[in-house]
Amino acid sequence: MEVKNSVRPNDEQIAGFSEPGPDGPIYMVNLLKFKDKAQYEDGRETDLTGEEAYGIYATAVSKLLVKFGGGGMFSASVERLMLGEVEELWDKVAIAMYPSRSAMMDMMRSDEMREIGVHRAAGLAGQLNIESTDAKGLWLARNDI
Image (cartoon, rainbow, N blue to C red; front, side):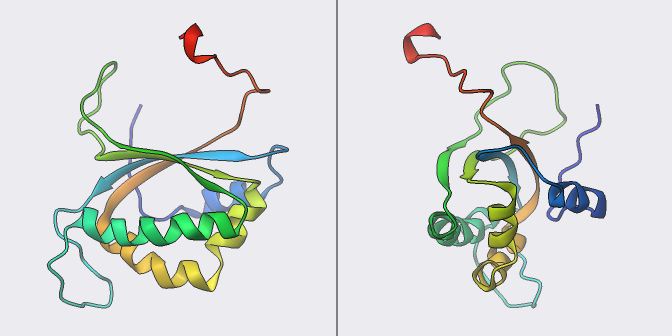
C-alpha cells in the first residue's frame, strides 16, 4: 500500500464526492502532517509554524462546521504507531461530522472557507481525508471495549 499525503483532492476524488452519498451524517477522519514553517501562497512573511497556521484555520472552521450543521468530534496529537508500518507518522488526527456530503460540499464552496483556507494551505504539508459513516449505529459501549 502506497500512502500519499495531499493538500487538495484530485479530479477523481472530487467527482466521487459529488455523487450521492450515504443517508445520514458522514465523519471525515483527517490525518494531518504540518510544514515546519508556514508558507503562504501569496508570499506573505510569517514566523508561524505550519501547526500554528493550521490552528488559525481549525479555530475558524470549527465555527463554520456548526453553521453548516456539523461539528468537530475529536482532535489529538499522534504519539506513535501501535500497529502496522508507515514511513512517517502524521502530526494530528481529527474527526469532523457533516450532516451529509452535500453539506460538506456547500461548506467547502463557501466564501468563508475560501477566506480561511489560506491558513490551511500554508500550514499543511499534506493530509489524508477518510470518509466514514456510522455503521448502522453499531457503537461499542465504553464498558464493552
